[in-house]
Image (cartoon, rainbow, N blue to C red; front, side):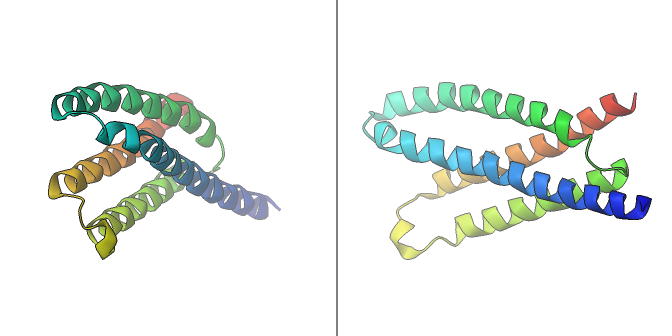
Length: 144
């Protein structure tokens, strides 16, 4: 009975992790789509100013949301080390897939320049490392 309960908790953990990662990156895509028309209407100077301030504000909000969610998710798996390994694997595979998809966009999106693609890759890696680091921090605080 205990094995079935642990297995179900682990399956629930995997579903929660996939849902959280999809929500974070989906929310980021939604924000990006809403800000793109406004962003491209700006002059070059104001684009750099907007990137500087908006990336800091949005990054802080995303990091805070990840931290809050990870404090709840760390309670789900019964084997904490297996949960950490699973979260790292899922987040890493998601990052690899998203970076691959960014560099292999269809021809209609070819006008994205290399700098924007590199910027998207940095955002993807920063969010992935934030997910893993915040889970580790929540795990350390939960164990203590």
